[in-house]
Image 1: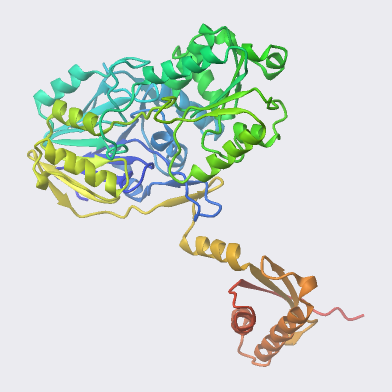
Image 2 (image 1 turned 45 degrees about the vertical axis):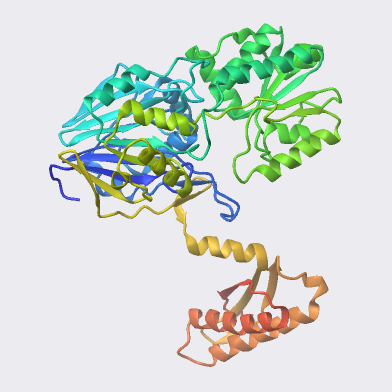
Length: 559
């Protein structure tokens, strides 16, 4: 994109999905990036740890990048930062305090030194060439959540970040007055959170959850309570701590992410009563009614603390029949089965389990329902609406909500990753898209896993792998010994000796056939082995394993 007077909004992630949030605003020779999140893989992505946005556009325009702006500290908004910093030069990162501490810890874990990480507040104003930035406080499930207003000579863009409207929140109120002021000044484009765009009404207030949890503590005063919730839901952690303090209970924390978030929240003053946090050893010396265990595993993750407790595999905590287990969370789509398995294991051990139902509000979302989305639109009065952060049906329904609130249909944009909007003289049009593929992370390796590798993993998972190792003397064009056949996930060698001998014979014939041709090379030999074995294997077993020929050039040693 050549520099010109118009403003571009480039979406790198967060559309058609819940997670991987990242987009940019570019005006002339200045780019500001908003968020850099990750997405967690679903079942089909074997061995993949995270999915990242495509950084190609940023690499191509690296000299224009002025800053990365962070709305709040959840993984789907900050999880990609370590990988981004290893790929692209980012002059500065501006984040609210809680997010700043989480980012610093994340970079420390990855041994990445970065000296340009700054905290902002809702009073902070930034300017990058002709791009002016200010922030406004929102309510979400983590402290220091903000929306961002970005002004350029072509108009004003406001992004909400993740938000809800809670009139009785655990933390500070959202700055509704500042939102209304921005609306009066004039908002051209609203980029708004769509996660709960399918949910009617208003979301449940966090204080109502507080009341429900308090009721459980009142009823089961003499029993040990185990609470599993999202480690990133700081306000939930805050009122769990407050409730424990009120009921004279100590808290024992399990799960690394939970421990990190508690530590940062205590340090930042978001959570008080540090003195009631105790060690597992101290917890074992107290009566059941004096202890609450706070742990990860609300989504049934196999390695999380609650799953190991339910399995009886946790080294420090063993379930007691009179324990109370509270799932202070709702299932993330795709996790219902794993949560169900964990709950069944808990019931088998005789404990009582509470989950979030219409009769017990022990969880509420940090995202806006339909009526709250309408309120945001009414406060900011945008000319154009771009729903963000959600799959297609969420985005589409959010666009319809905007139309109900008076935004013309042609002024709503249901986009996909890679799409680009052009804002010029307060008018927005679609521009030419860019490439914005998913980038897979396997371990700490970034972008090395492509579609072909994932296809191979799926084949190995379903049909296995067949390895052929052959020793030849290429100079004499001679196969030295019969090929060795090894399989994994295909057939058991001990129970299929006749098949293995046949495979050895086919491989040997393929090798000798190619060695007889003086023009053939290693690749020709491998291709012949693969072709001949594949035909036999498929006809015999109906399966299609990956066939991996390994040819070793070994010279005979003459004595």
